[in-house]
Length: 190
Image (cartoon, rainbow, N blue to C red; front, side):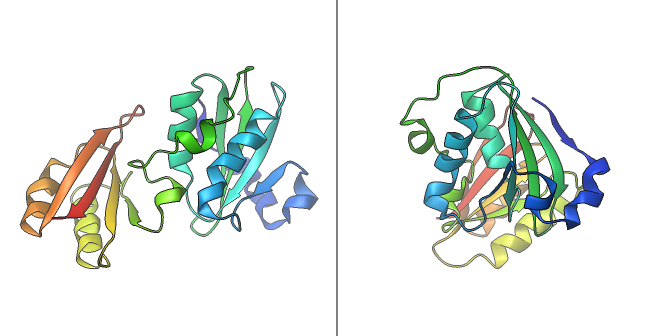
């Protein structure tokens, strides 16, 4: 899987998608409950070697985890623009696969912060930050977390210092290592 930022395309980012490439797929206005299913449908319709550029209003890394889980070695993922308000990812099909008709909705990850859970889960992506910044951002997120919502933290390493702090604030945690070595921790009020 290729995950890279392609700075050479940054000058093209100010142009409208249709003036740059007709393969753009803007999912910002698609309801969350339908978004992943439509993305997988679009990808499954591609011929090997074809691509589309996904445009989203947040980092679609949960979608990458879903692709990587379901179709390892069958796609390339290339960031063209990384936020903060718009994300563009070139997703290319690298080999033929069969996508089950029920796959897009049936396998949406609930603990990985897929768009379907966005209403109930606030995400804090603390990757790439030096300690203690990840812990401080996550704890700040817990302090302002609306009632009835959970917080999902994505970190470069297991946030072992977070667990006691979260428990002291009345939160339980579920922490899982991801295939790329990062960690996803779901924090929910007791």
